[in-house]
Image (cartoon, rainbow, N blue to C red; front, side, top):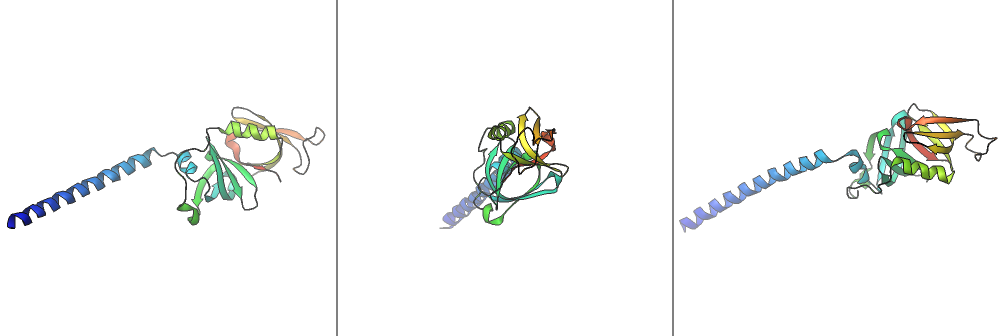
Amino acid sequence: MRWDALFADLEGQASMAREAERAVEVGEQTRILLGSLSWQDRVAALVRSQVRLACRGRLDLVGEIYRVGAGWLLLQDGNRREFVVPLEAIQVLSIQEASRNRAGAVGADSRLGMGHALRGIARDRSAVVVHCADGSIIDGTLDRVAADFIELARHPGSEFRRRDAVRETACIAWNALSAIQRST
């Protein structure tokens, strides 16, 4: 019987050593996984989550992330306004606690880049409000989307884009964008 107790004790020690080794391995794997997680991946995991975004230009947005593409997200706020936000414009993203436990799996919802999203808005001919990184706001309609800038026909947001309503064309670098809001 003494041998049984000795062997049971040795088996218990070996089991504890294996568990400790496994815990170290899991911790290391977790650190490796987190080390490879990108901003894009983290944001993509929050589709259908309520968030608060603090963006360049002192723009604060609160709403639900509806879509995440390569370098951008689509957010809808409580007033059902839609915002296309470049990921690089987000300075702080806060996850509402109720959404935190139901965040989706890692992965982009769309492979469409920012240019594709902006060209879709330009084709739609919807009036937009462009929120710039310096805090300025420009009303108009997207006329052209280039590789790293947009051309916006400036006109009052309450008017349709007509030749006589356009006051000027503004060229805006993508890195100067905080968000583009569909005008209501």
